Length: 371
Image (cartoon, rainbow, N blue to C red; front, side, top):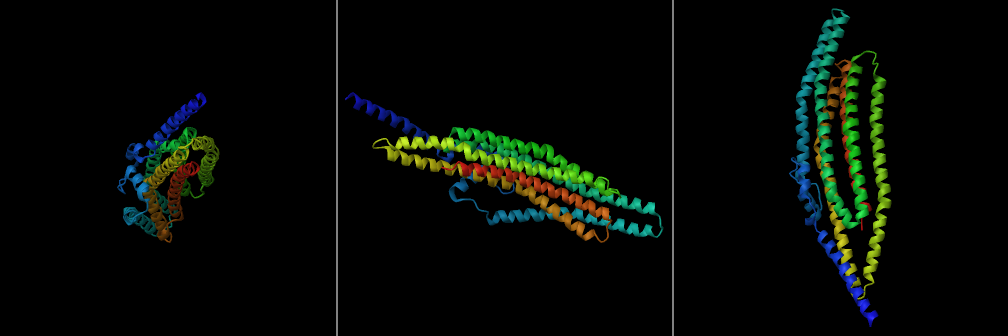
């Protein structure tokens, strides 16, 4: 009789314990339980009229797709940036044509010094105009990189609350720390190291093209290779380490969760029902986690889209400028235009790859922490 009563007491305690855990999880398996509004201020999506909370709810309810309004807005901004660059192009073309006319006029005098002075003044004027545009592009990338990093810093506490609920505290804490390290690494390498190097690269290229013997050509090539190698190495380290951690860390929590489910399932009478509820709650939590992660990826794309469009428009305009002025302009002027365009292209590449690194990191974590 005592053994029977002891068994009933143990069954009651198990039911209360596991039932309390399930109830607690059910409370957490709701989108309203997560602090999404704290991330809204960091998204600052003035172009697409979206805040992070509405974006998460939209994806959670029906899935996100690029509507005609968003595509139309992107095209409108791209054309607007192109028109903004037309003034710079017209002034630059005017300077180049004036320089060509001056060169032909001084050619009659057979005065080499006057011709060289005129060519140098033309080159200096053109590069001054274009470097102002490059400085604007540099400022755009610097600001965009800062916004992406600030947004992700604000996102990861909420996102890893969902990861912890879905997979466990060990996975949540370790992956949270690693993601914070990844964001900090990208921020330091891009903002403090790569972007200043790009600035130096363009300045030295302009100086190099101004001289006839081009004594700084090897230095320009070295700086460009360092920029590309550092960026690619950063991609390999972050993506590789994230993949390794995602293959090993979640297994410990998976083992504990599997043991918990099997333990619940052996409880007579209520085991199967509680196990089914646990599976439903876990699936709902996984959906919320992936929804927050997907919304974070979309938000990063939207934050970086406008800066990338502006850089693409500027780069396209400078390529066009170099193509139409090549028949009349000095070779050093065309080389200088290509240097500015190359610098803008590297800015695009660095901003794009930096966002992709962090997006891949979040995507790997979402896939690795599935139920």
